[in-house]
Length: 112
Length: 113
Image 1 (cartoon, rainbow over the protein chains, first blue to last red):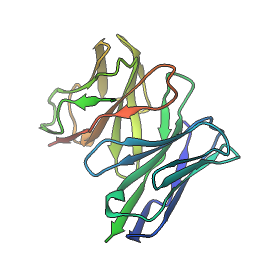
Image 2 (cartoon, one colour; image 1 turned 90 degrees about the vertical axis):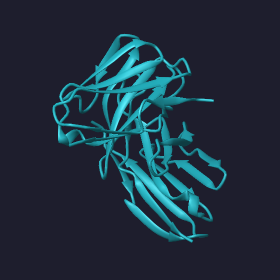
Image 3 (cartoon, chains in turn purple, red; image 1 turned 180 degrees about the horizontal axis):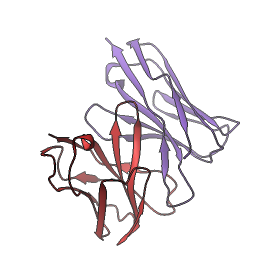
Image 4 (cartoon, rainbow over the protein chains, first blue to last red; image 1 turned 180 degrees about the vertical axis):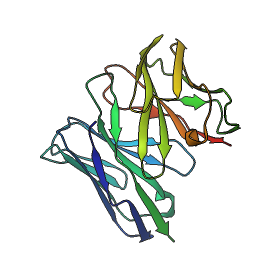
């Protein structure tokens, strides 16, 4: 199946720092999704991207759909302790019924 | 507001038991999915259903089956639980024609001893 490589695998940062993570695909995507999973909970959709070059914000979060259509980036500005969790990228996982393929996730730890 | 619920947050079962995990969505979505999540492996698709009584295997269907008798409910069945099925199980739903966005339940952490 399609592979998504997400990096970094984990990040340890101080409160107030900015965070960047990215995801690359072996094939071209027409959609990129970013999810956040709080500890012990299910993933929650943060941002959906539909167009190459698109830049979309959700509060302190900004995501970009790479112009090659094979990558995407998520930035978090001025991190706070509640940003802790696992961040997943996802893209179309096949030709049928909206299947998704997910990156391995970036574990974010924020020190107060 | 989108709502996906799962029958249990935590479950402990013995090897060889038959296990049922239930998922209910109230958004009238056609598509429903079951994933398992293991550290370092991300989310892996077990089975999905694109309509009532319709199902397709995902990437790791071995040892699992599913049932979808009603549109809002999608059940994952472990016919004979094994210790390597200890994992976090996540259910999701999606509206046909609604883009690729999937909406997840809170998860069931299953331990098989």
